[in-house]
Length: 483
Image (tube, rainbow, N blue to C red):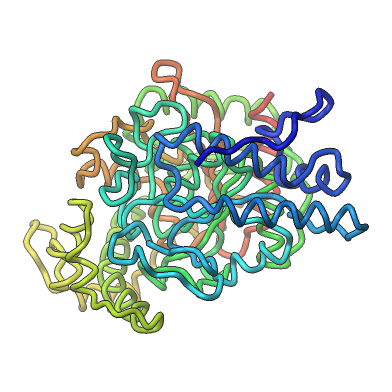
């Protein structure tokens, strides 16, 4: 695919690679730039960085046609839209009408939905142009993006935006890389236990997991109806708030004054950090404290055990039954066995063959145990118990949120061993508990580690339903941490 910009950009035109989605829409409406110029610039960056494996499908011809149509509409006096003429990327497990929805696996390569997922249709209605479907960990069952099914020859896995020898994280791997490398201003991913926030942290952009159920989940290849949610990814909290408003209709709150923000530091989330993450995260805390934010040490002694009782029992049980239901609802001529037979990533195949299909999960002694009783207990008691720990901590300490490093480590090297169980556990350690408690969480970039020069992220979690408040706090933290 050779993309040629149709016109030279004048010196007065801003750098298209740094524009926010909100600013781009305004400039397009004011005809200071054209949608066609912006889409061409994004397509050129996608082409120049194909080795990062960020996309499975690039929607070049249709995106350019839509951009030209939008420019013509505005030239004729058309009214603006919040994302009018702005290209976005969509994770390849979220339906976009007329584009393949592979979910990163070969069995679904020919599945083309006829309707877009509601979460995407709301953005299309706001003027967004879908530039392509981004790559991901196969079937979203992993956090490295090391997908054996879709990649450039000789370069397996989605690669890190800052260092291509490293992983991108996952499972919304390509969405994070596309945003971090300015292939697109914004993207949409999905998050079950880590999958929006963790790749954003590893690549240096902003990722938001909303309260579970805040966004419509129809038209998304599932893992777990209890835990799954779509989530926006961007280079600024402002764009995250814009996308959240367009999807939900909720008002955007102004940044919260620093001297009115009270954040908890729980020891669990600050253990086992690598040196780069520890240095960057503690430096960020010092900046926040100096700016007037109150930081409070809090105790959450039962958190780890309560989370373990929910995390894998829910995903492993629902991962089977939800996928079977999805295949049937989409009228796909595939059984679950057909899908599993074509899984290309060894780690994902092992999860299905040894856990999901037989309905087994390791017990405390590492021996296989029946999954259904543990799932029933997680649903009937476990989630409520986990949420109660958060509610008690927030109430007793009068917190607005918890703050912690999104990932305890910077991005590991990309190789055939990176998707090991040990790496999986380490990479999801900090983000998984809040996911299981159905909390909103916002990951912010806080610079690169001094030794690795790889991105580090810090997260704020709030109680369910506090999404607008978390975004308002995030806007303040972003201002402080960029100084």
